[in-house]
Length: 348
Image (cartoon, rainbow, N blue to C red):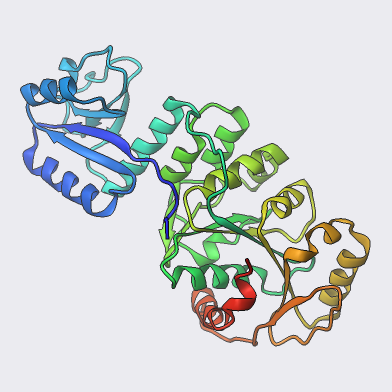
């Protein structure tokens, strides 16, 4: 599996704290090598030699060495600071990153700042991942559980799977650790068209339960700033960072949904046994002209033990009614059923 096309930022960390330098270098090399190409120096002579031999994207310097860094360097300079540093050491216009925080947070901050400074010089040119859209015209049918179960079934096969939640009211906090950086950072860059979107997504994305994802928006209204063009760019950039991109949509049908259906390789339409779910599905099939354009890539997912007879859809799978103590356990149980039906779910 190609694991997506990820950009590695060439980062030089210059700090006289040798123990800290080793700690951060070892951690980044072990856990963040897919994002960061790390180099370390601990003296002024080492800094000057490093800068003379190689071009870096970002140079992160501590207070002792910051004044010796060439202001004309063609790279992003950031201060590596701590509360023990003297006041007033930060040159005007220079960003700073707290030395004493989780190294994963330092990596995320470096990538986020670089993405905003570097411009969209690596914009998407082609789709890399297979894109699966998960949608339902009715609420309460277990759409998100199905979406995450499908994503987990792919991750089991050692695929790089990106779960992208585009619901009006996100379900991310109910299934994942939502303490990371908000998807609103990506929305802002898309709206303003002022940075490297793929790099920013790579920098602010989180990982939990084997899936990569973006955390909740700062405000639910942020979701509605996305135009069809924004959605297109968001999806193509996410798809370049994964083998499989699973997009969880709201039950509404709007411009965002239309664009996702257009880009998707597979569309999973989830329904259940209730009369409301069946009625809304029938309405979508008979009254919405979009269905005819996507019917060849639609799989109907009859969830919660439903028995559905829908002649308009050729591909169908039934999932059992599953009980679990929490949402994550529920999705894992469902993913086992999904994995046993690979030929239906993984259409060419």
